[in-house]
Image (cartoon, rainbow, N blue to C red; front, side):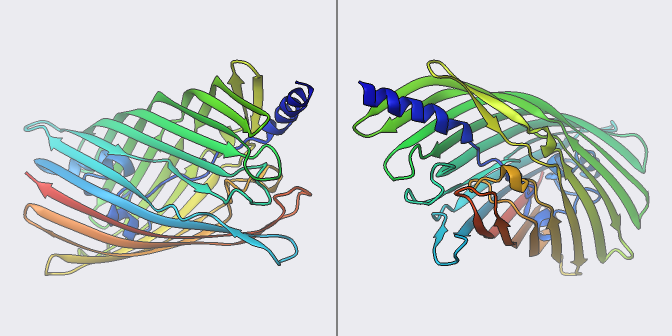
Length: 395
């Protein structure tokens, strides 16, 4: 019994280093937009405007539907300070769907729409013998949004929109308790929250268009269980919950169209990760565990260009510079964040009732060195490949 009490005391001391793998906001919600580096807020001329800028759906006549899939393979590599040993995350390809439908209400200035997409998500998993296993082994989140919107075309140049975000989140965390394999602390929880989104589009001339899009923050109460397991010593399952603040984000965009054959756009996308300070995991038996984040707000600088051809095809290219969110002082291997370069190319076709788009995206995170005097010290590199496609139909 005494040895079990010692282990339980060790658990209590170890758990406060908990961290979630939530450092990934997914801005890619349509293949045409992804091909343009997500510089789409001031263009927003297909049903995915529900996410990128709901005011843009007033440009769509009749009824339009669009389905897409974003598939990604990502990997993070850790190298210890000596440079002799390295660890890679396990292969975890993921595919995230998107669906949008819009309808212009006949003989009115209003258009309604509905979207379903995943604005946050993904995750990472390290081998059980990782040197930093007591900081994190596995983290994942599934986050889905149902988003009805209504847009009003005030006049020929100005539209505004508002929508409701109904959000579902399912989070899982696993970390080691001791620095040797085959022991763990796990949390799994889920919850529902509600937010909203707003949009504005102003196109004073055919050559110039401006867009603004905003998605509100949402505080979701994640309810579930924690599991503490050390073979031969203890196994404890208890109810647990925590409130997690998903951030709001704001995008400003400007599109320049010198001729009908070209569209250039630049956007600035701000995510308010600064809201993530310290939360508490409330366990039924063991009590509260602080979960420190102390993240910084971050920016996407997005640039995109599209060339349209007479044969109904178009090709696009884009670039994003993403600033890091997680400061060195609260760095976790489960969120190997860094400044990142994101490049993309794509092709699409649209005629009469049908349309499709296909894009490839490469994300590169240059080496980031952490030296906090902890087991997480070392160099981290990030690389991901993504392929996405969307198909549309006009009724």
